Image (cartoon, rainbow, N blue to C red):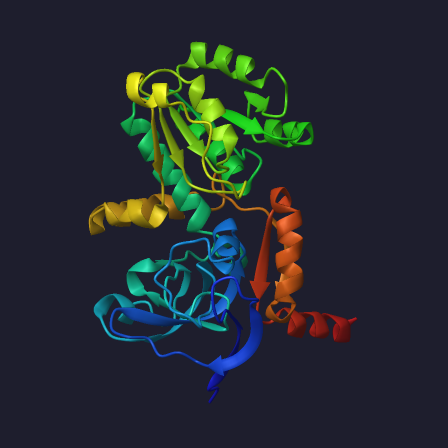
Length: 342
């Protein structure tokens, strides 16, 4: 019986992650043990590796927040018992995240998969898709007919275009390179503005006068946050959900905050889901399940074996707009088998 596994291990925040052999973990009550098939690299994973992301993990730990695989053991509880032997997409905040051959997750954080979706397609089910679904709920709570979104060419941004417009909410897409325009148009985007243009604020102001968007989802931070909020209508709210610029939120006018009732708040999916009861969470997951192959489909740019984690990480950092990088644990074995068949 296998007693150890290959895993990416992070000894401490900001240290270099390394691949090594460690003991297979044991799930506790309410948890399940999952044999991992695939796990994506997300911006939140990169932030965690650099010590810039909040998590309950203690060090050393196995990083990786989402993935897919097969449940092979139950630590105790009815929810876990019914999942044993089932293929699942899952989210993990445990010490043993998704960048190991085996991972531990709460049974409530697992989504049983239908037969018409592969484990590779399903491994990106939580971080981006569930965030987009939750953001649409937030937009509807504000009763806005349009939203502003930075990092529009990201995987999440492209999902947002499809899902929001399918639900009657326009997206004002903010990009940084003209090369991204055609890609977004293919997704159905009809409003695309380049924040690098000298007349960016004036163009955005003109669009906002027509659409009256009062919700702004910001993945970047930095000075751009304040520049966009400045031209938004009174009573607008900026939800900061990422920090891709690696800079603090800046350029926010005190006058806007005090006299125009504009707000800047954080948005973290984990915290948002905690505001939902079990029934509401189940409804969200059921909605998610039906959209994974359509509006919330993820594009994969590259697949690597866990032994190639460093190479995969560097590729993703340089090519985020191209698609996700998936970490797998049988990649080299499959490649060898294909070579032998040839």
